[in-house]
Image (cartoon, rainbow, N blue to C red):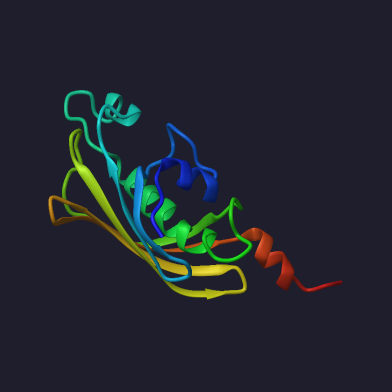
Length: 150
């Protein structure tokens, strides 16, 4: 499955200026999501840092999270639901991401149980690793199905 901006909007709720993905080349529900963000004159470049503009590390992680969320949101009955990041580790930032770069995002859902997904993702610029993270995503609506009833 491929998703343009309209398709991305159908599956997840982030919107501009906080939507950090432009196009999805490939989604295999429950497995992988890959695509990109073209960095232009984005809002964060004006403030981080005006004399040396670059994409903040936490926004790099957010771009990976948004892409990985599509592995969950394209699964049956999850379209348009909310996915939350609950933890991130093994963060690695290898190079600056600057205006004019295309940040290619490659993500994987390693496990999905009871509304909790273990994921990883890497961001590449010009074929070189720019960032990496492992993280946990949750789908609260699914988790409540497994809550202990009192």
